[in-house]
Length: 417
Image 1 (cartoon, one colour):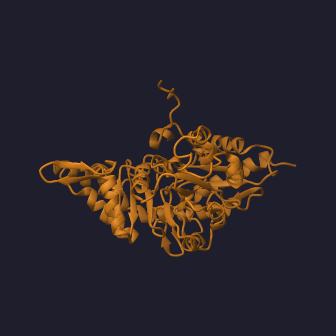
Image 2: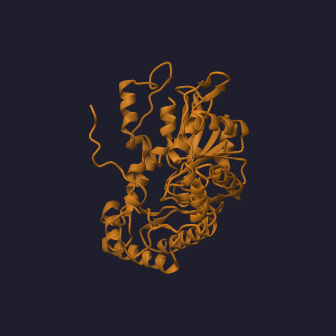
Image 3: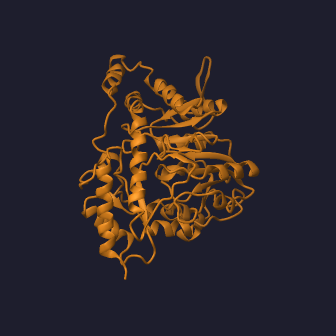
């Protein structure tokens, strides 16, 4: 029986329609000057253009990496990465507990067991200590998420992975051109996923990719992700030797993304400046806790800005605070409890309770706890977190000052005692 699909999630411009306020919003997006030229080239070539490979080469060059495998979106990118890895059903992959469903969709479809590491205290990102607490004999990899564009503390994580013999994968979908210790987010593990969906920092109409320096992995990503796992037999045709996908980036998407890539660097620099200014201004407001920026973070390619309410400092909930600043002019302000994956993915909890594949012997030796209680730091953080996804490169200093004024006035209105 079909399930009721009413209230289905929307994305991109549709998700932000109706937003209003005194601050800029991403839409309409600023488009690269060459976008019309590239789109015409696709049309005039009769769809024979090499636009997708041109984008792949250009982005790989910008990232300083060897291979870019372009896909229709970020979820397909991470899906083909999960499918390309030489893992077995029941193998465990440690994943950031605060993230989007797209991070783990591919893992679940490949029969892998996502194990959610708690967030580091007062953070939305995981750290080496939280990862190590989740490691078992079945752990094969760690998939870290650089949420809001703020990189995880990668050096301790990389050291831990080396000691434990684990693969590091990165979800850099919100962190294009963020840097940590002089290295770009998405360049520090075996492979990484990126998003070019319309609302993201490098916003195209859609799109994503996997980046890697491993030539054999790149070849397998194309075989599984682009060629549907099919090899050619002379005199016969396609033999589907493995179940694969046709997750190829469309030519027109590649054209738009290539044009957007040509203007992204100054936009990222502006996001970094404005996010750091917001941190300074909001950090001066009693009761407001801003995200600490590690000295290792050279560039914060901020996609989504937010802050936390100090416990007991206010007489309102984070939801009430967010609703108030939205009414006062910060478009898209809200909370983000749905980012708590062990609580949001009810199908995982149901699968464990019912003993469904792969949550049964011999595929797994334990039953993961998919609940908010399994990640108390993450759950506590999200209960206090207020964020807005309308933050963009259009911000100027006066916008940050106005945002801080709105937050300060709301804080005064709800201040306890």
